[in-house]
Length: 94
Image 1 (cartoon, one colour):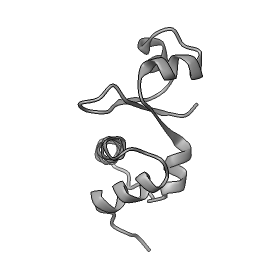
Image 2 (tube, rainbow, N blue to C red; image 1 turned 90 degrees about the vertical axis):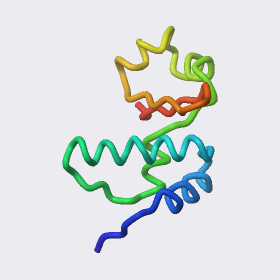
Image 3 (spheres, helix red, strand yellow; image 1 turned 45 degrees about the vertical axis):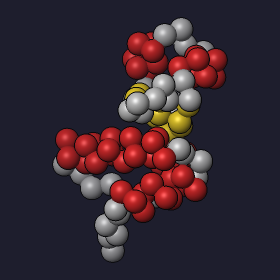
């Protein structure tokens, strides 16, 4: 049984799990492109997405929390999604 998820349903669910509106939309776009690029269909599991991806307000927050010196070092170790029109970032938790 599959459930087609609209951007609005995804956004609302992710906001309920602590993401910003802008962050949830950036993650939705990333996941849609991932499906298209890899030819796979992801299961909709907002709790798993929340566990797999973290949103931070800026790189300084990530630098402190993940003990990295620069964004390139972080990008070498995980997926980094920049939130449009913001300093915010979403990273795949590692």
